[in-house]
Length: 193
Image (cartoon, rainbow, N blue to C red; front, side, top):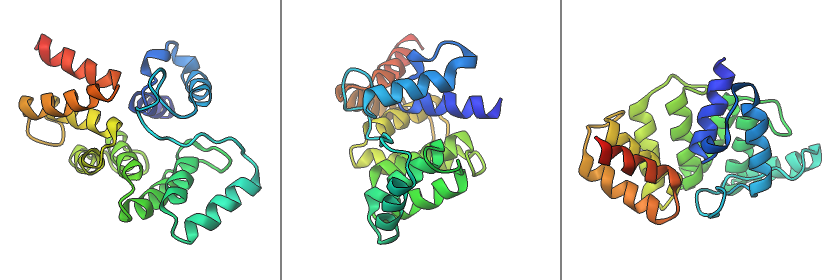
């Protein structure tokens, strides 16, 4: 059940929650949509830049690892994603976090957003909404739309930070303006409240 929750949360964070219907099919549906979308949110291509694994071969992973070990932030982020999803490597939240942190130290916004997600869901770390907010905000300030959506959510709910509808509105409008359907949901929630 924890794995289903993690996949469901990852699906939500990367914009696929509307496509996930049946609990027993969550992981399969997510992976299919993820591959078909080329790593971008359905319909807009702006939601995020999650790498799609085109090859699970050991050669691909080894080439990625060599680049990552030489300090290539994008390769570090991609290798972290490989470990997060268990694509071509054994799934390891600890290794995912290790590679995401190395990329984040170099200012990689996608890695910062991924760290925020891992803290939000407690993947390999203790669940910590304050840390999740902190990392998501770092990524959002660099223009990461998925992270901006999360920041809007945090301000709206008061998870990880003080509740502030003005900031929730600002970040959600910014993300919605860049194509985030999830940010539109946050805006709708604020309107209903």
